Length: 135
Image (cartoon, rainbow, N blue to C red; front, side, top):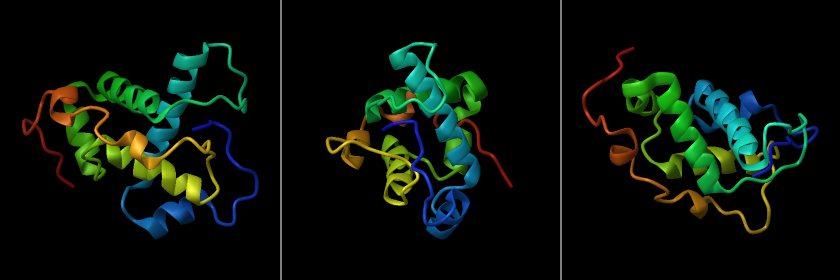
């Protein structure tokens, strides 16, 4: 996945996300932050904004895990669950929704399958069932 967004998409990111309906806007904002972290982790801290730098699905999933744990600690799993994110495949579904909507780029070698079973959420977040967020 490359960090640069494609110019002039047919619909806005918000419209695309709302039409899909699987994940909330906040989850995509978090995905965007994790993508920036993954690019920095993979390519160094001096990356110029808008530079085309690729990261793999696995690298992005790892950045998402680290950012979630840094931000929410023991509540990370509960926040992700509230956003309807239950596995690394959900991250892939989010990424490829944006790719298919023309809002992100992927290489020909990239696939949503790159996100399948990158890690087990129970092991990655280690707090299964202890916390639940209510509306």
